[in-house]
Length: 254
Ligand code: PGA
Image (cartoon, rainbow, N blue to C red; front, side):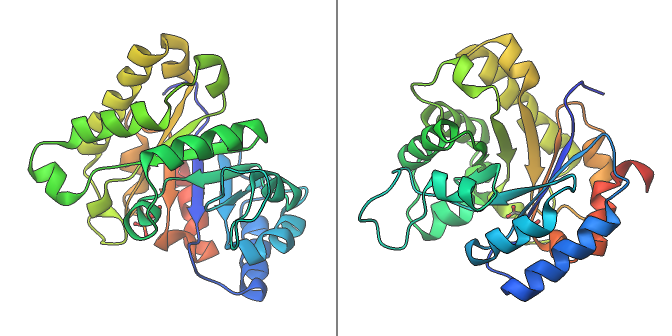
């Protein structure tokens, strides 16, 4: 067991209306009231952020956003800045999710800019990386992760990155029910951690939380969390139902 506090984060993606998001947040707040030794975050859709933030006040659940723009303000129709997210109550933001990379033209370069802007606004970035199925089959997993980490964290020094969270999410495991084995997750996380040591230093490598994401469910969370370099989970499908999600948060007790 490492000294890193586990984080269980729920990415609600493009699900739930404002009303539904409030209901889910209220239910979750009641369910996890007694949770200890674990950090919790939920990332509702933009339009629900402010209201869900009001519900979460005084609870141990942090509010996260699913994306942001790197500029502070300006003529960028349809975009939302880091300061706006802070204003809505967010303390974390998911950056570089594979769905954004796959469908919305997110690149390592935009991810790099977004991480920089998030940190400037004192938002904790949850920086997502992961290989596709064909990259894994071609034996390219570690070179892909290497490139994503180096480019995403380009021009930072270790002092900038004290709050950074990384989410390793193999694209082939997201929403497919095909979870990586815990050995596959551990191998990737270990690799990412040693890369952080190579690029930055041992302290940053030791303190950075690396979450696993991709079909995490109540029946596999514990096995994954037992691995020494798995510090939490970024959860899509299983975060939508508060009762299911709370089982992940209490992974130690199931
Ligand atoms: P999933 O999604 O849990 O539904 O596989 C994970 C994610 O996209 O973060």
